[in-house]
Image (cartoon, rainbow, N blue to C red; front, side):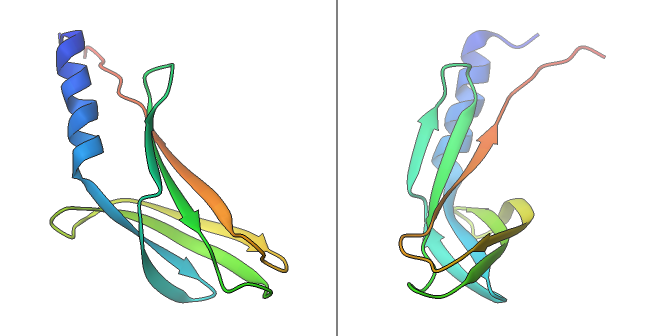
Length: 103
């Protein structure tokens, strides 16, 4: 079984290797930086993105992707989030939980 230190090392690996995101809004994909990273109290790892479409327009977030330092896709989520009269954008969060199971 993995030790608590091994699980922490996996979390650190995830934290250190997620480099950037790509977000598809209204059919257009755009590379955006990671806004914030956080270790939640329950042990999960959270990665936040600040998605800011053009102000004053309606926007639909269609896909959110995370990439590693080697520009390889690590995580992807299809969405249908509609923002009306966008003023500031949306804060989007990926959350990862590490679970060890004996089989």
